[in-house]
Amino acid sequence: MLSRRRALALLAASASAPALASCGPNASPSAGEDGGALRVYWWGAELRAGLTQEVLDLYSEDNPDLTIEPEYSEWASYWDKLATQTAGGASPDIIQMDEAYIDSYGSNGSLLDLESVSDVLDLSAMDEAILETGRLSDGTLVGAPNGFNLYATGMNPAVLEAAGIELPDDTTWTWDDFLALCQELTEWGKSSGEGVFGTSGFGRGSGDLASWGRQSGNQQLFPREDEEMVTKDTIVSLFEFSVKLGDEGAAPEAAAQIENASASLEQGMFATRTCAFQQVPSSQILTFQDTTGDPLQLLRMPARESGNAAMVNKASMYWSIGARTAAPSAAASLTGFMLTDSAAAEILKIERGIPAFPEVQEAVRPLLSENELVSLDFAQAMQEEVVKPLWSRPRAGSASATSTRAWPSRCSSARPAPRTRPTRSSRSSPGCSRRPEPPRVGGPENCAAGDRHARGRRWRRPAQAGAGAGGGQRAAGRASGGQRARRCSTGTAASPVATPSSRRCSSWGWNRSP
Image (cartoon, rainbow, N blue to C red; front, side, top):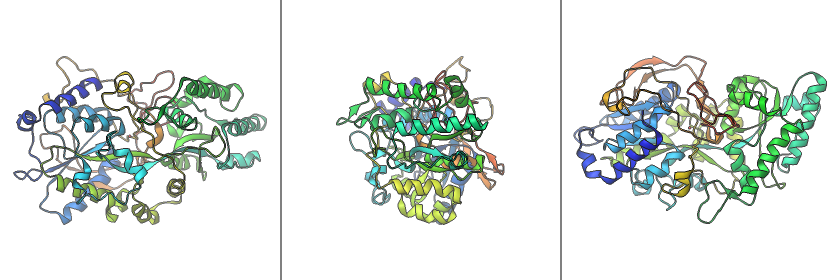
C-alpha cells in the first residue's frame, strides 16, 4: 500500500493533469454518462456497510433509472485507494471524507464546492457552527457533516453514590475541583477495598490539549488567521496537571494509565467501574453504559476558570462530492437524501454521530434507547453554549501541514480486510509487500455511536473498493448479532502509532478515532 506521503503526492499529481486523468486508462464511466453508475465510497465495517446499503436501496426504489455502485474499505487502506483513484481520474462521485484529509483534497480542487449545487443539496437547516467545519480556509464548502459530537466528561454516578460523595455541578466546576473530587474517590476506593480511582487520567490526548488550549484564552492547535496557536506555557501547564493527577492519587500511576490505554474499551478502567470519571467522545457513552450496566452521565469539561468549559461541536465525518463527477446534481440529490430524509434517518439513527440537522435529530429520537438518548440529549443541551468550532487540521501546504502529522478524528469500525492477493492496480510499489504503518491520527472527539455494535440485520454486501473494476458487486450476508464492532486503532504515550490489532478510541495518547 501507499504511504501517507506517497498518497498525498498522488493527490497532488491528480490536480496537475486533469485532462489526461479524465481520459486515461484508469478512468471509469461517471454517473449519468453512457449509462455509468454513481459511485459512493466510505470506510467502515459490516454494520455501517449494511446500514448504508439499506439507505442506498431505499433511494433506488424511487430512482430506478440511476445505478448506484457502493464501495467501502477499512480505514487503513481507504485513503491509499482514494488517492490512487483520484490521481487516475477515477475518483468516486460521493466520498466519505475525514477532517484530516478534507483540506488536502479540497484545496487542490478534487472536491466539489457544495454551494454550487445548493439548489439540490440544501444545507441551510444545518447549524452553521457545525456546517462551518466542512469549509476550507477560504470559505469554500467541500464537506457536509454527517453528524457531530462533543468531547465531554463521562461520569458513573453509581460509583459516587456508593462512596457517599455528592455529584458535581458541571456548570461551575474547575480542574482543581476535579482533582479534589477524584482524590476523595480514590481514598474511598482504598479504604473500602473497592480499588476505585477518581479518574483514569487526563492530559496526554489531542482532545485534552485542544480543550485545555480553548480554556486558556482560546488558543488553538491549528489556529485560523485570527486565532492564537497554543503556547509552550499552555502545553507545559497541561502536562504538569496530568502528572499531578497521578502523583496526588486522583489517577493511577503512569504505568497503569498506559496499560489502561492499551486495553479495549470494554476492558478499560471506566468500563470496568474502576474509575468514576473519564473524558470521552459523547457518542461513545453508549459503549460504556452497555458494558457497566450503569446509567452513566455526560458532563461538561472541568474549566481552568469556573464557567468557561469552552465546549465545541466536532463533525464526526463528512460527505463530499468529487469535483470531476459527471452528474453533480445526481450526486447532490443522493447526498441530501442520506443526510436529511426521515426514512434514511430511521435506518442510520446515530451510526455516524448525532445527526447534524435538528429535524433529523427529532425524527430519530423516538427510535433511540434510553442509553442512546444520553448522547443526543447532552449534545442538544450544549448547543446554547458551544463556542466556535476549532480548526482541527493544518491547512494544506502550510508549515504545520508539512512539519506536523495531522491527527484526524474518526471512529472507524473497519474490520481488517480479508487477506487476498492484491490486484496490479492496488499494489503500492514493486517489491513492497509490507503492510503500511497506519496513518497517525488523533483526537477521540468524533467517534460515532454506531461504530460500537454490529446489530444483526440482513443486507447486501457492497464490494470493497478495489475488488473489481466496477466495485459494485454485492453478495448476501449477515452482520453477527450482538457482535461488537472493531474499535478505533489508538496509540499510547509510549507508542503513538497503533498496530492494526489495537482497535479502540480512548482519551489517552495520540489516538485514531473516524
